Each structure stands twice: as structure tokens, then as C-alpha cells.
Length: 125
Image (cartoon, rainbow, N blue to C red; front, side, top):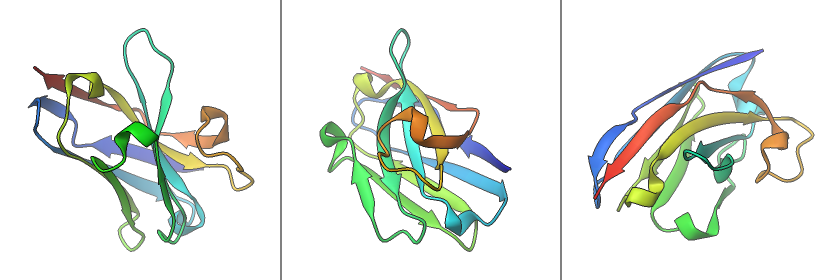
């Protein structure tokens, strides 16, 4: 079992930045590819970013490339999401995710084995 706890969400003005953190406990953190998803009110949960277990590979939702950066620190069992140039459309609950070891497609929620409880990000115009 892996427990994931997000932090760093909040209210920010458009154009601002936030850095989300996700602290993991439980099994060996580095064996898990990790990711971030988000869910806006009335919408389905959508993929945001992916990072491999050793941090060597990353992948992003196309529309977020250049604004969002995912990283991880395996020594601290933590994954991060740096979000810059935020716009109101980024408003959502952001969820940290630990992928299934047999995962093939990281963009689908079905690929996730463990979820965090989510952290609210609100971007005001």
C-alpha cells in the first residue's frame, strides 16, 4: 500500500505560480512511476503530467507543456508539480497518482493504482 498526501494548493491570481508537493509513504517509492491528474467541477478527471520511477522520463498533457513541470526526489519520497503562468482554466482539484507497475498508457485514470486525496487550486482572473 502507498499513501499519498498532496500539499501546496491554494488561491492564486492569473499569471501566478504554485508548486504542488506529494509525499509518499509505504512501499519503495522509486519503483512507482508517478503522475498528476486534475478534475474541474462538472468535468472528468484528466491527465496532467507523468514521471518515470527514476525521473528520467516525463510526459505532459499537450496544452500544459512549457507551463507545468513535474519532478521527483526519491530520497524524500516526494513528487512535485511546478505550475507557472496559471490561468483560470487551471482551476481544479489536483490529484497525485502512483501508477500500476504494468501500466502502459499513463494518460488514463485506469492506469493509476493509488490516489492522493487531492488539493484545490483556484486561479482568479
